[in-house]
Length: 123
Length: 126
Image (cartoon, rainbow over all chains, first blue to last red):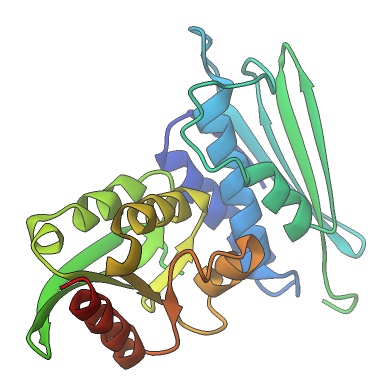
């Protein structure tokens, strides 16, 4: 599954539902995946496109052996402090705790969050 | 979880032992796109005029930190006037567990318990 979304709030639900479509039946934890994807896309929408920078949020989900790999990538400003932060500041912490493994890559070309979730072996 | 990511909110004011309690009952999904609607409901004239506010999240299929932020700000503003109920095992309950906000949001086990708590808080504050 590959999606390219505009950085607006409606993209959060679109990404979440698109990922859930492929999660169903895999045995991956739906609630955890939904929340992690929502936090990752929400972070991109709120924080990535500042200082006049525009771009998109790309969401990819794929099955790899016994894991579901979800990637949320933006081409925004990278993970830099946001003094006008309108969030709770728990997004990255939640993503790390909800997923089996999460990595955050940031540069001046944007941020990529990669989340790994366990799926059932026989699904 | 609904297919649309939409939320609806119903607000009703109930009389609990002579005390007006505003019950805010959102349903659907709450995220960045609509958390402000929950905030607006909690700031509605019905809530402003009530002695307590009950946020009933039992019909909310999904909530992320955007909705939680609104809840925490509302609870901080309302203090003892604020109570919450969630459905056990739901996505909202999972979020509340992970962020450990049960005390801050005065989460009750049932609607009756929440209403009694709010009435007691109103009675205590005179």
